Length: 353
Ligand code: GLA
Image (cartoon, rainbow, N blue to C red; front, side, top):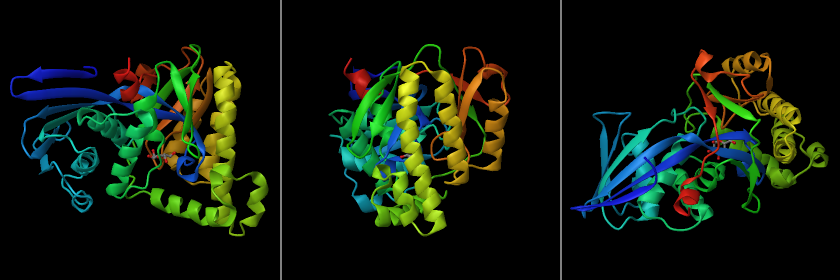
């Protein structure tokens, strides 16, 4: 099913597939005014909204049979937190901002594993925004989806909904969160990206994500936004922990720019080396990995033809992404679940085709 609007006898049914995303490089930079390079992928969340004229929205999910949630079409910010089941909270938060013209039935089906670092929640949010009739470019949609996450208490940055809405087939999206500017970066056909699931699940609400945001804010109070800072600013940070967090963000932004150039230029060994350096920095300076994720990265990295491997997304479990020469990794032959991922259009890019 693709991006589709059909009119039925009793109202309008609209279906949208929000793509998941893999961040190729640039993690924990977006809430620091830094840069990142994610791509929208061919795993997605399908949302169907059958508008009924009712004043309530009912939500069901294929993944949770027997569970359902309902909330008024016009929901104020206070009423989206604590909604049960928890996955329905994001639906209520998006609805509270998107303000669909009428209530109805929302149904969710997903091929994006939840809590795996492939942005199942941004995929869901952009698809909801679309079926609820939000107009505008990818940045408009992304800001609304980010605000919805904030309403349910998750202080995420903007890269996930921005690429899920605004990615282009065959491209990764270079994002500068300081200026909210983007650039499509072509992914050469010889670059094969494989996502491998460590199987370790995490929830951003209970992970150290918010703590890292706070640590980066504490560092920024001394040297300014970390995404705009440079190595020369590091000595001003006297607290060694904050200095390490800042060193990750500063180095990661430089790696994003270098990686975008290497990828577009087909210099895949250089791109792979930057992914390796990114993982090391996330493991040692940012402490966003786990022993299981580090072991999986080391295992994949030791295989012939694999050029670079790193954690992707928030970390503390979830998926890793490997760059390999064609055929280096066979997802069907790997023990943990794995996918060969190719860049697809985001919801807004598809709408505008
Ligand atoms: C999560 C957040 C993003 C970003 C990444 C880490 O995916 O939703 O905004 O902060 O973690 O790079």
